[in-house]
Length: 313
Image (tube, rainbow, N blue to C red; front, side, top):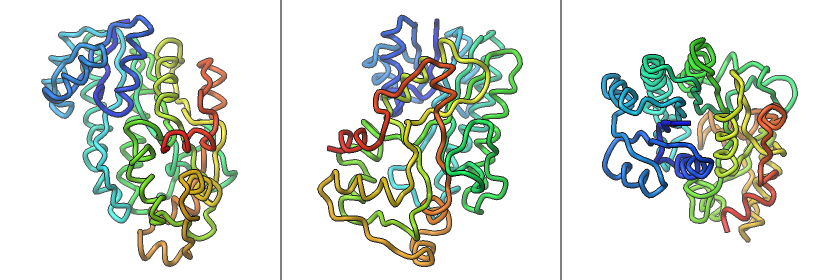
């Protein structure tokens, strides 16, 4: 297929573009400027330059490429996320998930794109009731903490818009927490260093369940979804969701670091805010059974237990 990847020079784009090219697809990477364009060329794709928040620029770029499929991987995340001001730090990413998604869908419809894949998230956004692991059919959080509200609404917008586009096959991929090259859980990455320096504590009982995915596995699942996924939502996570009290000490041990400190919930809320405390104590993980069953995909790193230590070494 002729594929347009929006966000081609980002962490997952750098994994995705070479895999698409290797699978025989013709790939154009949408990027904002010259540096991104050079990165796309180095990955084996052809660049198209446009600001994703400029509807006319997006329409022109898509019309020139005339892709058969679009993969929307646009985010704008700071290297140092302030959990006390979560929605503020996600403001630009939220615009890309709302306005950017709408611009890409409008341009895609104009040229008759047959498949549209978009990035979402499987993490803190599920309802914090019931069992520890959620499927794609389980509801998102109906009452998120205030710091999450704007970001969760942006995720809802993206998922509704993409899966509800009747003129194309709209697929949403809820990726787990990334680790591996170009992410915060990599050699020298921000979270790796926080864990190494014992600045990433277990809050309360550490009951929050996290789902991870190696960024290369996420890219391979994206290729599978592009080639034969059906309309709908897929969780793209590894096989072993785990509570913070389990995965965080294990990662610290793999780094040769001291065990993480433990702080009571009230102290976590005071120091890092309610959003961070909820993530450490209440969030649910995600099941990858649907993605494995329908996409024929299996993560090469089935568990964070071996995958993260290898990635951060």
